[in-house]
Length: 178
Image (cartoon, rainbow, N blue to C red):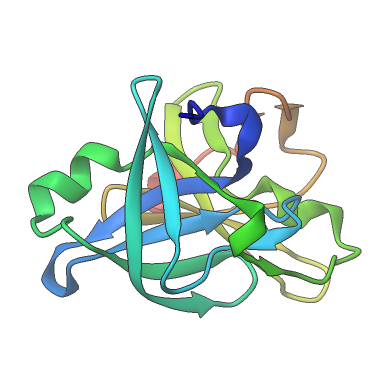
């Protein structure tokens, strides 16, 4: 008996944020709303144009609660890694680590696409940097980081279903990051 692998059988866990070609690793943005974390010697499933592609996790190192550097078997070139950059990934919860829930609702913005009204798409939220009274979104596009204050005054809308944030950054802020 064969069981077809579908997204309904898996747990959405985040987004492939970027590549680190020199180390053959990819950076995963972990969905803080997820109850599970990927672990070594298991699989993650990347949604590539609607098809779930399995990758064996050879090595994983967590970078805080929001991201992880992962070495995947057979993902042996920067070109192959870039092909899955920006794709959502899923895990099988029966073979993963159950994680403790955080009370901070902002952490589930990891992996969201951010767009500015004036400048268009800025990139993907790769981290949330907490400074007292001034949390920042760390937005990655290719190998560049843009820091934007996580403040209600700048957020136009958040679409949790589409994992999308629209902002109106103060004049000159985006230019400072270029």
